[in-house]
Length: 239
View 1 (cartoon, helix red, strand yellow):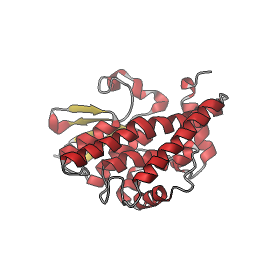
View 2: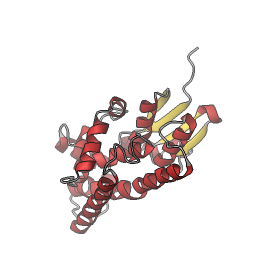
View 3: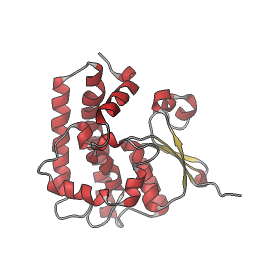
């Protein structure tokens, strides 16, 4: 009889959705995955919201811990790192630094770049161009990437020499600067960090799951991907 995987992941191909996949692939943890189809609004279904009341992805169920449910991508990364003892630094101060930079991604880079993407890649193709919002979120996205570039000065990864969940959380968002239409010109530390993580096979394998979306990173047929993505979220666009 095949042993059931400890972790059941519910996710989709988004920046937040890739975070736990990066951990699980990098940590070589056996897991089961269910793809949540946004076009069918599965994330809003009753069965899914019984796991995640916010109706967002990702969510995990830890079968080895009384089917304990964890939602919110940053919380999932922290839970997995503690459970498996990987990709978190040791020591009280180092852990606090990890939490600070994880929150920097969760409260800053993710939401702000997400809005830059929304107004330019979803709303605008639907005929709703908001110049103020585009400038506001684009400018702030660039500022946040500049903060990240400064933090990476003299470091291999965000916290130092070791790859951690902070890098896992931040990379999918920052690496999608193309989709947010934010320039990374002159941010040499950031670009070198991209190159290092681009070269990590496990992370790149995670980005192919559950379905690849190369347009986020400026690859493939971007125009077609933008049109399909915008149409998928058409009901979210408010005139």
